[in-house]
Length: 513
Image 1: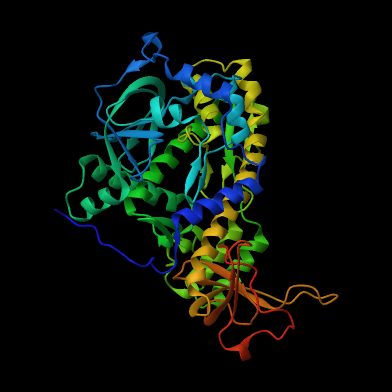
Image 2 (image 1 turned 135 degrees about the horizontal axis):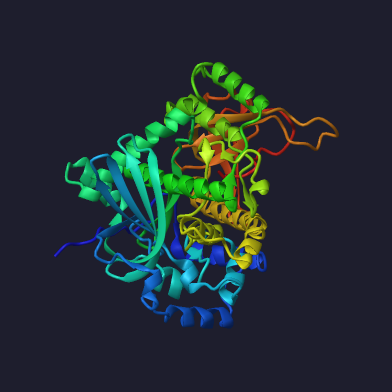
């Protein structure tokens, strides 16, 4: 009989799960009214009613694809499964069937669940829980593309040539049945061992082709790891998590579908795009100067996407540059249009380097449901209803307002976990990479001191430290104080003689990354 390892002491830098739960509860109480936490009785009742609907009824409008062996690919713990795929190689290239959960079947336009979803905007992910966009009887039940469950879906049929370019787009409603729930880490291990699931081998192949096309058109992404909260028995801890190659490939499949949706909406003159303006020239010039200073010059003949892909976050100077590159990815928003003359003058999402729309996560994001509905009408040669067109114009504002509220809460929750985890290291010294430098504020003496922002690797947090150092250098900092209830951790220069002599208390702005 196997035995689980027993630890009499909490792992270094971990937080007791009960303490974290209490902290998040208090944080939610502080934000009471900002984010809806519980569903009202009428919403839950409507969800129960909707869950009993028969998607097979009226089958003339829904194709039966339950004999197609779809699979899903998500984190192992996920149960709100938006997408399922079936991939085939053809004589000319590839055929992609991409099934997206048919949330509109369960959520009536202008009904109580729809109104509640507009208040929420998106599923909110906190370190110890999630606050769903829809009641769980839908999002983790009948609407989810769970294995061995017949479910309604929007099915994109994308025809690709041998280079991975989309040469044909179709969209219809169908019944689908996933045969397997695959998990990122397990799939990657199997691929690395040469024993990958055939569908995943094909997904990696298509993903590689799409990545090459992204580079050709000048698209870019920031190659940085995610900060992750990991549960270990009755404790949680912070760590870094880099995306597996198969996750990148899966992301390319979603991007490809979002680009197909955007092309349909632009062709027919109605829809909602996800837009981002090109980086301002001054930001580009500043980033190019920073690359020169750090000794990793961005050559004039290299696209910025190609340059960013060449950077490795494990290198201190590269990490600093990746941090500065965020200035090139600002201004993302949603643009709705109901007539061709309302199409944005520049419909391109600059980071993707193509028009793009959110369309593959309707269980977790409000806007995707409306994009799917309007794209279905376009693909089927119908004019969208006036009710749907009227709703399109309301969604960008709903996404913006709810996104800001959710972002504030997620940021505060992350700071809570960071400071709680840092408590175990109080008084210790760390190596850290300088990723930003700010001059002292002038005026009446009450402004911020000369300070630098540093990135620690273990624990994986950033902090502002009152000291001076060049961006990209590695410095020694000491964790002086930790105040968990206030979500603040103060770092100082380990060598006090190198700290900025500003007369202010030796504290950082916080450990939030």
